[in-house]
Length: 423
Image (cartoon, rainbow, N blue to C red; front, side, top):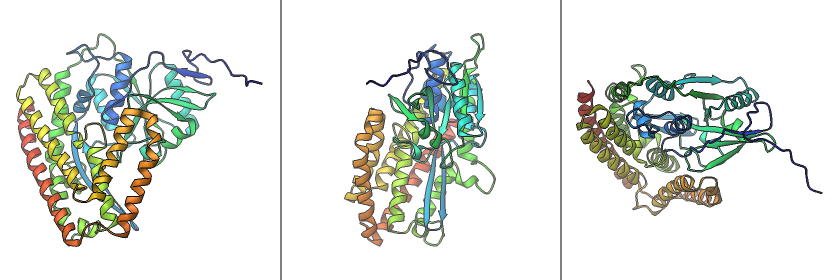
């Protein structure tokens, strides 16, 4: 006897039960998690850039929000150590999602932040937002997702539908295909791993007659970037952890033999160093499409900015950042060099996970277990016998230091030129 199924109208708003998918939603993919999610929502709502009459590009939104940045931190707890390298501009991200709200404010769209008291309340609020036609952006812990998530970064996705009978939500993430999360998977990802708990952003399309000063928005984004790169961020105690000074700090700590947070002491030869090298590589190359610490994406923004501001010199600065992108890519390869077969394989597998997900979405999961098993095998091998001698480790760290300083010099020069164009 066949099981009876309940008939549902997927095009009828139903915030309390049934199933509903926002009619006509077809925006998927993205290079950077937050800017990509916002681009997808704005495109669905019909918001267009005034200079083209087309949806805002992800690069333009990214740049208006301040674009790239640099931050450097290490953490220690018991026998655990970790490394964090910020590759987009740093903003206040507490109750207020600084990066996305800044972008929305500058392009003239209303954005409402919602914090829910429980997973049940959060689900109800999501359904109500969907019923009103606006796909919410939600923050999730990428490590808690059942598919590949952005390494060590704020991760957002778009929720555009649900099905109560099957206990699932339809989401758009950085791949070009639709994804499905179960109710429990979405709830867990929204309140674990330091993610802003049960936070969502609802975006409204601006009134048709509302004028947008895109020149001002672009200039503000450029100024934010230059300011943070030159002056740092946060209190005086932490300013040197951001911007150009952070690159200098990182370079110094890579080879400092006595500093307790220097790599020779904090990440000694062995498993800790291997994890730090892999983490740095992942954060540079696998936080988004294109890699190279988002420098290619920012260069594309500068080209678009030239069309808006009419400053051809911005194209030259774009080329400077394309060169910086090459230097970042070379640094990534140097972190896990070809000369060490296990390191080279690790680098290739880490990137394989990202490109599989971007190209195949949920279908990528078929290959992920084998990749993860091999990475675990490599880690075990490294723990038993680290593949570099002490003098080779010193040479590796010295090479990385030199490369970071070259990046510092290249970006310092580019920032000075850019600063002169927007003030």
